[in-house]
Image (tube, rainbow, N blue to C red; front, side, top):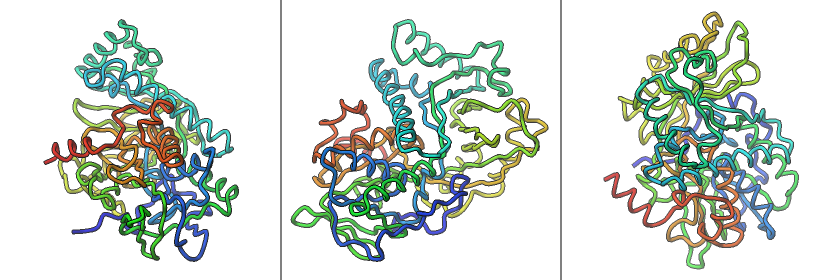
Length: 449
């Protein structure tokens, strides 16, 4: 059986078009032999966990960050670059979580947006972070009507999750959203950023601040993890073995490759995104990010207009979902989808948006990325079941920017205090549905059989 590791030479993305000087950082020529805390993964999850570890009352004496490829070359550098939660997601969870559970979920994501803003400002990160609004747009009338019914019932009942979201007026939908044929549109809070720059620059601050405590080792794949008799973690890599008292798996889609208990619980799925650039400037500038659902049951495309007038667009699932092996349980981001699939981006903005018809916009870059999918749709945060010295922050279902920043705060505190999620979740507002546990692993495994 093929080992689940990040593959060499991944397709380059727009977000990786300006490599940081630390992209191939190895703080020391040789891999350290021991440390207090090891973190596997150098994306948003790994680097923000390290950041918050060093902000604890008793920070670790030594932290080693291990990355299989170049710095932040996985999902963080391949996503849509915005943090939000769709109104359709909130509405769909009313029957599962109850109104209070949906309130908690929305509050959590709003806290994540605030956390991203605070870190970017505190650390003076030049990552194009903007506090914005985002449109969820439906082009299917039945979907739009059903969503509005749930929203209106919840609003009339006074539930807080409805207070900072709203429907655009029907007669102005196309004018307000610029989306041709829009049947409904909801405005929700969000922020957008250049995720790779956020992560790389934050690491740069940490390296300067903690030269004797932080060690970064890129291009060092971890091939196995075991727990020794004394509870120490033995982390086997291509360059030797590192022993760590405590270990954090910030491994998202690749988690099951090192933790077999997550097989079929966090599954790698391959997605597609593009960077579209107009040859003729378009005015006015698109000021919202977007999720667009074209037909009922279809996954939404996600769009993030950039300050320079270009736009990052991800999705296109309707072109490849029928070819299951091309995306499900697939962790190869070194190849693109077929040229036929990529025709989805031909004249995309001209087809979808008013005002772009004469823009001559073209996709200057198309890439693939690997997301970690879970059967219940929620991430896994907490102590690894059955492993006292290990914690996990993974399985984001393509929504990592909306889950990771606050989840990393919680993981950092758990690691520092040797505690479980139940001990810190109230402080950080972590929804119970995010907690990893033996029961949740068993349920997920059973449901996928």
